[in-house]
Image (cartoon, rainbow, N blue to C red):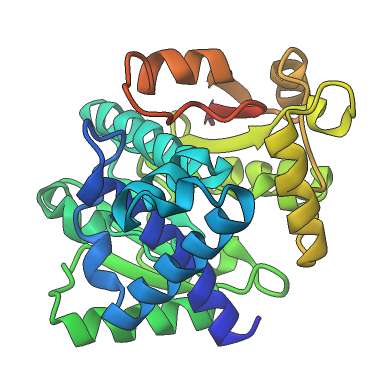
Length: 302
């Protein structure tokens, strides 16, 4: 992975969270620190990029003023609503898990996640382990240092290149405690991996955690591969991803996933389909944010 690509991808997600936090009401997920992680030049770069895209899609909408035009673009994008709602679901589920004794929070592919600073009070109760590609993590730690943010002793950075490194070995070489109840978040990843790798990773997490630990993840349903059922926006997004060398490889059948996971020794204790996500996080909004069709959230108990 090239550092400029790594940092650009992580910063783009931070920009989407930042825009929502500053400009939208009510908040689906309020990442009020995301704005600080981007420089003024980076903010302008993403702003110009999305305005350019909007002009290509609908030139009339792009003439409504920058903030209004950008808001329309954010609401029309598949990425925005998915990033916001899955982050909200994860942290809502984490809060409940902490009440039942979870002591460790492991963020796989942490990117520019701000939880450890935005929810600093929770680090008095739990240890946080950010697991990510070494280049992304180096970039983030440099940015944190530039901002003068203080890292809690309960925050641990674990560099892992998932293509060559072992998650188990990396965690065991840190202060991660396999006997403590843990909570893992694994967001925005499953659909880019072969299905066997997804199951292998989930089994690895189950093997290295105590019974009762949880894993939150998101996935796409198999309708994305059916030309008659896939939503046009999703189809366009998939074509763009394939063109950029990141094709969608895996999707799951929501009706059989519980059994498939059980056969792998895993217990799916909750899953939300797009309608349930819409009801929980987007109901009665006056803007055009909606749950992404085909996107599901799941929670596994080990």
